[in-house]
Image (cartoon, rainbow, N blue to C red; front, side, top):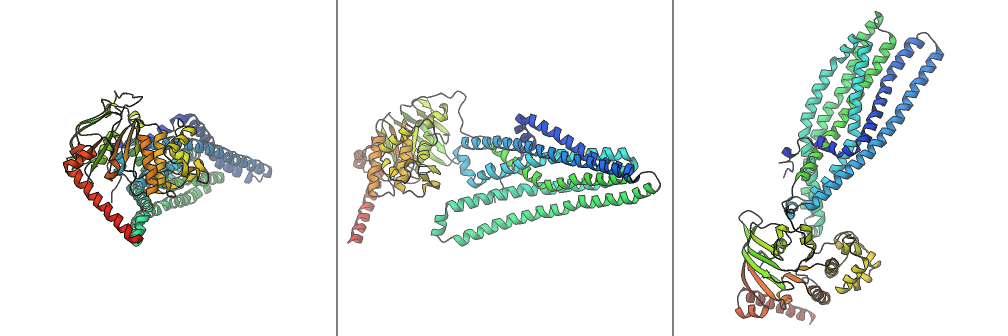
Length: 598
C-alpha cells in the first residue's frame, strides 16, 4: 500500500507553527480570548483559597453569617467563570472557523492550479480527505485544544505557585508525582505519533478506494465483482482497525496515569498533611485548599491526556495539508509570459518530442502547421499520440524537446489562462457537474449572460431538449449528468464551449456511440461551431472527417502521412487501410442489423 506520508517530512517540520500563521490576522481576538482565560484561571485559583478561608475563619468558629458570605462569594466566582468561559468559547469558535475557512480556501485554490500529472498520481478520494476531514480535524485544534493547553499551563503554574505559597514542604512532597507523569507523557507522545500518521494515511487510502468503486459501480456490477470489492474493502478496514487498536491501547495505558497520580497525591496529602495538621504546622483550611488545588492540578493533565488524540491527529492532518500546499505545479506561467487578448488560430509543432515517463517517447520529432481557420484531423491507432497532441496544445504537459507555437508564440510563454481561455475542448466523455443546466453551460462565469447561454444552446441544437425539461435551464443536473443521454450531454458540452466564445476548437470524436437522429443534430452543430475557427479533430470514425482541410496520420508517435481524404485514399497507405477496415466493419454491422429486422 502506498504510504502518502513518504517524502513529506522535509517540507512540514513545524506544521503547528504554520497553522498559527493562519490565525495571525485574528491576533486581536486571540489576545482577548487569552485575557478571558487569565481571568477565568484567576477565579478558579481563588476558589480553593475561599474554601480554606471559610473553614479556618468561620466554620471552625461556627459563624454562620460568615459561611453564607463566603458561600455567596464562591458562587459568584463559579457564575463569573461560567460566563467568561462561554465568551471565550464563542470567540475561539469564530476565530477557528475563520482560520479554517482561509486554510480550506487556500487548499482548494491550490488544488485547482496543480497540473494534470499530479491528479494522475493522487486518487481523488485522498485529495477530498485533505480538504474536508483533515481541515475539520485542524479546526478542533483551534477551537478546543489550543485553549485547553493554554488554560492548562496557566492553571498548573498557578496551582504550583499557590501551593508553594501555602506550605513549601507539603507542596514539594505532593510534587514528587510529577516526574512519573512527565515520563509517561513523553513515552505516549513518541509511541502514538507514528501511529497517527499511519492512521491518517489509511483513512485517505480507504476514502480513495470507496470513491473510486462507487464511481465505477456499473463496472463492478457488470462483472459481478461485488464480493471481490467487498473482500478488498474488508481487508483495508481490518488494517485500519488494527492501527486504531494500537492507538487506543496506547491511550488506555496513558489515561490512568494522571488518575493514579491524583490518588497518590491525595494519599500524600492525607498522610503527611494530616500529621502536619496534628502538629499545628498547617490548618484544616490549608488541607481543604490543598485538596482542591490537587484536583485542579490533575484536571488539566487528564484533559490534556484526552486531547492528545486530537493533537496527534491534527498534527498528522496538518503535515498532509502543508505537504499538499507545498506541492508545486510543474506547469506555471513564465515570469515573462505574454497576455493574448485573442488567438488567430495558427498552431505549429516544431520537432516535438514528448514522453509521460522518461525516455518512453509518445511523440517523436513531430512537426506540422495549422493555418488560422483551418480544420485538421488526427487519425491513427490507439496509442499513436493523437490525444497527446491535444493535451500539449492546451499545455497540460510541457514538451521535453522542440516547440509548440500558437500565433508564433511558444505556449510556454503564453499565460495559461489566456491560452486555455481561447481554446474550446469538446471531449467524448462529457463531464457535467451537480447544479442546474444553466450553471453547467456558464460554469458560474458571470461574464456569460443568460441570453448568451440560450443563444449558444439554440445554435448547437441543444435548446430543443433543454426547453422540454421540467424546469428548462433551471433544471437540476444530478452528478455527472447521469439522467441525460450521451447525445444530450454532448449537446450541453457544445453549448458550454460556444458560450465561452473560443478562438480554437479541439474536438475528440463527438459522435461515437450516439444514435443517428442525435448524430445529425451534432453534425449540424459542429458545422456551425467550426465556421471561422481553427478546428483540431481527434478522429476515431474516419467517415466524419471527409471534409476537413488536412488529415494527419499518426503511427507510433510519428507523422507518417498527411493530406486530404481523397489524396490519402489514392496513396493506399495506412489511412487507406484504416478506412477500408472501418468501412468493412460498418457494412457488416448494417448486414447484421438488416438480418435482425428481417
